[in-house]
Length: 95
Image (cartoon, rainbow, N blue to C red):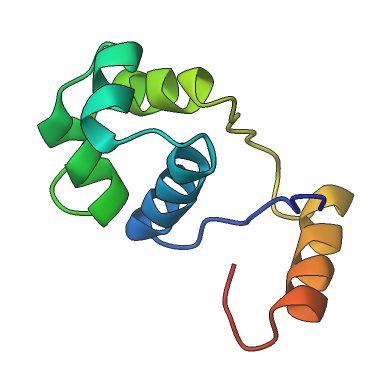
């Protein structure tokens, strides 16, 4: 199954993606934290969208889980395609 890109519209939108990826790799949160060189507390805050997480730490977690963050202008064609793909795959769910 192909993973479609996700538009993050809120600070807590990243957490579920991180949790889903970690679980897909069959990693417990404590094992993932140890492998990625971050604390369990940081992983928990990131996954639950609670508190703040430094960008460098969030990027390290994404990198370690095989994810990437891409910043593009809102009017970029990829953004429009992602919105359309999200609407088709999960109607009513903001991305």
